Length: 550
Ligand SMILES: Nc1ncnc2c1ncn2[C@@H]1O[C@H](COP(=O)(O)OP(=O)(O)OP(=O)(O)O)[C@@H](O)[C@H]1O
Ligand SMILES: O=P(O)(O)OC[C@H]1O[C@](O)(CO)[C@@H](O)[C@@H]1O
Image 1 (cartoon, rainbow, N blue to C red):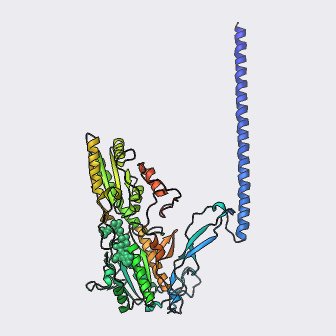
Image 2: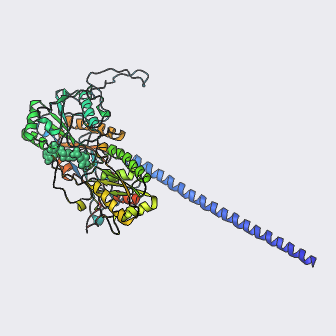
Image 3: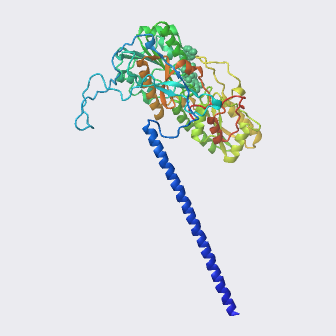
């Protein structure tokens, strides 16, 4: 019996040993085959990489870029948005070369290349890069193969920057700068940089600041100010405009008479779409009267509703300034019981860009209401039951509403401001009362609603770093453009490059709106999880993208 037991035990041990050996063999084989597979994969990847390197090298040697040639994609037609040039009507006043006036030219070097001996030629230093009149920036950088054998088309913009040849003799330039419409962070940065560029970089004769917008051309009490680098030195640290602004005024005859009287040959107009329409009128009148005057617009508005450009200056600062209002609303809503709801009203007459960008960047917003998307109060997609659900989940809710939202509920206003822009009904107060009513009816505790209106706070602040940099680029390129002889244009950032845009094209589709079926709104929905109340797309309607976020 004992023997049998012993035999069983040894059989069991042998079986166990065999099993473990088999398992070990299986594992080793598996590992080996996995290793083999892995080294095979690495070899294939290395082969592919080396083939790619060889291919890239040969392409580069042939003067082509690296990468794979897409045979199914090409850009066949490019349409330039031409900018008018004074050279077509008047002889150039300058025969010299465009140089950076405020720099000494280096013509000799010591043996130590890092310490050049400056020998000033007296007429300035060469630019590192001059832009040729044929350089363009392609507008539609997003491309896909054209369907059904069609052609791919895009428009293109004139690239901004210093030109080799100037139309104006800089020392004979008397420039005027005017700011019109609502305030916007960065106005002072633009005034300052225009003045500095005109005087330091080009050596212009005189720069006049027109006070109080277009009305300043003919209002005796608002005499122009002569701008110098000393006078404008610190203005960029302040919000608002050193020159003052206004709505309403525009008189073409008096404006042209002013230009003649003060021998102004370059006019810089800073403003929104209304201001640009006025600027183009002045340009047309100057051409009609054969006046050798260049007119340039610099697009400004916190609403970011000037079409085609990546963004208007001041927008980024306004979105940033809105953050503290949203945080205030969140604190008030979360600390005030029961059922705290904070409402923030932000500017945005017909476009909700400030509201959606402020909401997206804050991450604290539960409901965002903009003019482009109809407001539905009750029912399945209603914003009021949605708010009630959100308050149940997290104890409070934050709402951001653009001032132009809810026209479909409040009715279109018939009142206008001095420029003819329609006045807006009080959507913030309306929402507050609707929320209170709804909660009173549907929750025994009701709601505690706090309303924050930071409208002018976000518009009158100084520019942030991003806008300050942008204003500097805009101002310099405006001066480069006018000095070169371009006229009737506006400057802006398109696809992150500075370009010159013909004003009629710019204003044709301005003010622009956020696309209710675009990706920006989709991002808002993904963050807030609010019901989508955008009207369904019409048959054949195409989704376009707001240039700020694509
Ligand atoms: N079509 C036009 N022709 C001539 N001048 C105009 C025109 N539209 C507006 N303006 C003038 O331009 C100036 C600014 O216009 P508006 O008040 O509409 O501001 P805006 O430039 O559109 O900027 P904002 O974004 O602040 O509204 C005003 O003096 C107004 O009279
Ligand atoms: O009260 P104001 O100065 O006329 O300006 C209000 C409007 O100006 C804007 O900020 C545009 O400049 C709009 O968003 C707003 O509706």
